[in-house]
Amino acid sequence: MIIWTTLLLCLSTIAFCAVKRVPAGQVYSLYRHGKPTRLLQPGTHVVLPLLDRVAHRIDLGGRVLRFQEALADARDVRGTVYWQVLEPDRADAMIDQADQLIRRGALEALQSEPANIAADRRELGMQLKQRLNGVLRERGVMVTRVELDIA
Image 1 (tube, rainbow, N blue to C red):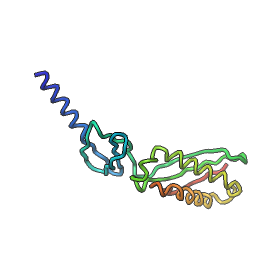
Image 2: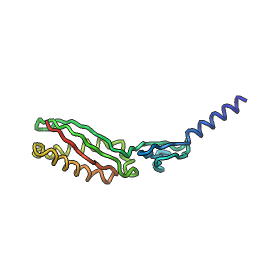
Image 3: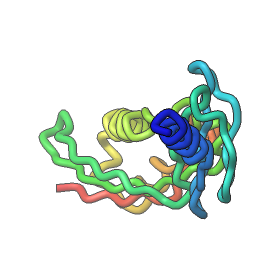
Image 4: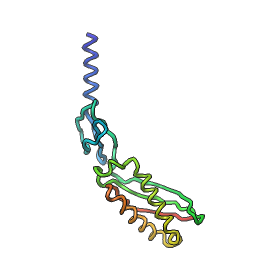
């Protein structure tokens, strides 16, 4: 009797782990043996519990990245970058490094344009947005807005 109860508990646990529910506004990337298999769209899905694992939970809504950096001319630049994932299949490979890519790209752009920092913040934000989108669009990510505060 104990063996049957244990077996039933093990089977029910495996069956419970086989069902994945993906909430609306998110996409899960499913990996098998360390390689991407497919994307799970919102809804309920059945996966192989001992082989498949969810590697990334990609939020399709907007995200916010704040940064603060001192530039070479002794000015502090604070900014907020609003971005979102447009193509989860492309963004899956780099989603863990997205914040670092955006931060590095923004700081490189600001350091390469020191004369424009004193100019209109809105215009500089638009240029920064275009420059970041040039790099990130091919990776399935889009910057929607950039706000800068220069001290």
